[in-house]
Length: 217
Image (cartoon, rainbow, N blue to C red):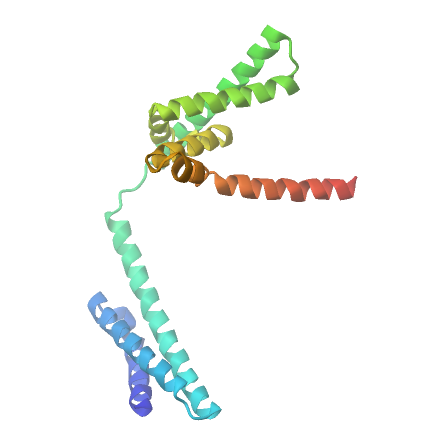
């Protein structure tokens, strides 16, 4: 059995030199053939009587896996090429302009709130900034609840994901999506499904940076 498999692998090695000329169906058949042989090799390796025989099967397995990987990479490249042919090109310039506009408007709104609070209530910039952040979070949450911020996101793309507004949108969106599962197992358990990584790694990063500053001080 092992001699047949070894012979098949060697013959296939010669056939793979013409891999560029093969169609996708032929490559899929070869890949399926290798998968079947892989299972046989694993079983034969497990039943090996001694370490020399097991090492022999391991060499055959490695050759089998290398051939499978080579074919799979070629199939993946063909798939990517076919996908590029049918996928419409994104209007990059228009998307960048929209993202810049939407992100800029959100930042402008924050600056307007800061200036208003400083002039109206006589607060300094350090005190006014948190109020602006809180205001943007509340506004974004309300707009998300009414489905308006989703439309802003479709128009502005990445520009609508300005950290503060994007964070608020991710939290409220998750709450709306899972509210049908209840207050505990739905909203309570999954409200930070999207925002959780931001909170986790943001907290870890802040601890590390704070520790570095502490050591430097």
